[in-house]
Image 1 (cartoon, one colour):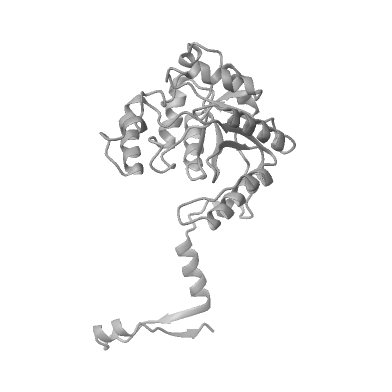
Image 2: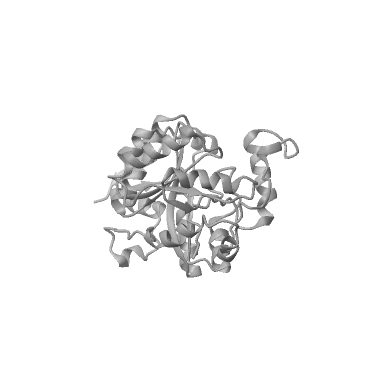
Length: 303
């Protein structure tokens, strides 16, 4: 059965038009066996997606949409803790190298940190000979590092040339998987997506032109609706869903009894300060102006 594994949430700023909880609840209502969220160079929405999936009783597949500096995009699903650590360190290093708000992620960095992950390349709209060579080169370079062979992620957006595009991608030789085309959970959010695109491009909704959503096919589709599409491109997704990771166990050095207490950073800081020094307040005889100009506290060690 089909399941979307690379949906964008509103944590992809000015692009995703639905909250992770809305995506998870919509997937549950549509009868999907699993749902995956993969935001652009970020894991910010995964925690909310995991919590919503646990409450809804649906399998959750955490992922990342890696956008390289040269424009190439990949969906990545780390298979274990070590793979998650490698990708997170890579994203941190890429953010340190780029300007504020940008991620300078290179292809060499991706290949150096791809070990233990399941990945799918998101091809561009136009499939040319250069795109085919690039896909084959990526598959060859990542074959010894990935947990599974490199996939090619495709979507069906009813643009009129979908069948020809899918046939060209299938001829490259990479296994196809249906993922990465969802921006919102319901068709009603199409207008919100257009408003976000206008803000991102610095224009108005009326002047978006071809940058606007041509239809509402970027919504979350039911498995039965995907099965009725006039091509068989979606079938590999059904057999590949079970191979993707669902959750990663977390380890903590704090005992379970202490983790259940409502510890906060402020309370820990207050207790740490109280254990070292005792603060003596200012004298009430001082004027308000003098208190504002001199904010010194006298301290004495606790005997």
